[in-house]
Figure 1 (tube, each protein chain N blue to C red):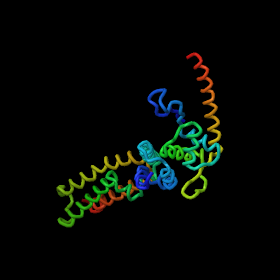
Figure 2: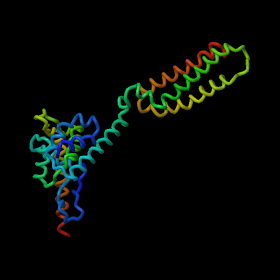
Figure 3: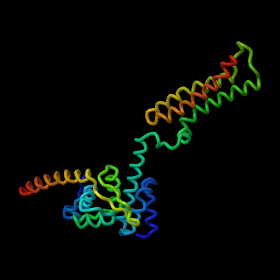
Figure 4: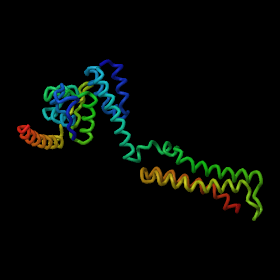
Length: 113
Length: 163
């Protein structure tokens, strides 16, 4: 999965510090319980300050569903909630463990800056 | 976001995607702010889905080249068949006009046209087989069968009547 810094032209830009890896953010959001698209956008914004656009969100949802990492639940009116699968949970755990290592190593190195 | 813009933006996505996600995506779009950032995000994602969908069709051959009839209508499939039909027509018209020529008679223009049409089919059929057999074997074999059957139909009167 890809990790990018979101949009900012300069490190001090207004998006600096926002983490944007849409599939990982969707998995992390659904780890807290099933949600539909709009609820995911709000949850992710509250979790890390990144507000995914609807196109980006549904691109990630389609990809994750195709890979069996999330699954759709019966629709509620026009909204369809999704939940994370066991495979999705395993992948999220592995990705977060890698990120944790990265954060530790990066933070340690920052002491020399 | 207003309904007209939502419906217009949905058209950026391929039909299969719209069928699967269209309704719920529309619901999310209606709740989203309609600013240029959202519009660009949706358009970019829609184009990406179209590209993914097209790449998927090219990768998974077989059911994705349309029906057999559509597949067999492409120029590479039609050309050899048209040449066989033309060659057969040349033979039949020549027979109708001049009857069966005597043995060892000089080859006329009709004979040369028939030979040319049959000869030029060989590279056309070979190109078709080279291009399509590995991508969609069943359809390609079906079209090759038709091409060969029509070629045999064009050859048959020449050999049967000893032209």
